[in-house]
Length: 255
Image 1 (tube, rainbow, N blue to C red):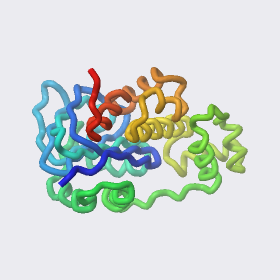
Image 2: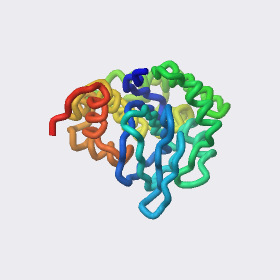
Image 3: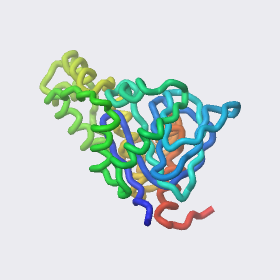
Image 4: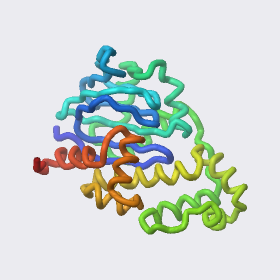
């Protein structure tokens, strides 16, 4: 059976990517991380002095130092979730240590829900049904929906995303817009815009764009800005994600 093609899904205040297994050095990031292999097990630990845990899936607390080993022949699903979001809060409730193994029965349920052929529709259904733990997401205010649509469509254009301009698009006063935005999305406006840029750049990298191209498309000032943001928030670099995507598609990597 051929492994599923690599892909990604941008979720409000979250990003989920899937592709071949890999090994990381010790790192940390400012979000909840979920990592799961679709077959067999992976190895993960919280630091050089910690014992390796062998499991099918694990959850990592924000800012917790950790490293990972997953067979390149396996398919790994990675979720990077803002801790202030509904999904981040739901997952955080189940984390008992810096790095917590997911029970084998839960892993089996998740794998059955995802099936052998990953695609964005199945991933989204899995997030809603299995990861949100029965939580009902807060309804987004129509004015906030208009503002988010405006931002998503113009990330690369260098447009004015000031509070005054976005409030005008939403049809609300600046103070009211800030209140309903955070209430609806569970993430403040500026971190959310940065998260959208990060999502967009990661999706472009998974679809074959270079780091420079992805930075431009997502509206980062340059490739260095994108790399700094990746390292700080995801514990990896655009180049590493780009190489993993190319290798999974059988594209030779020049050294």
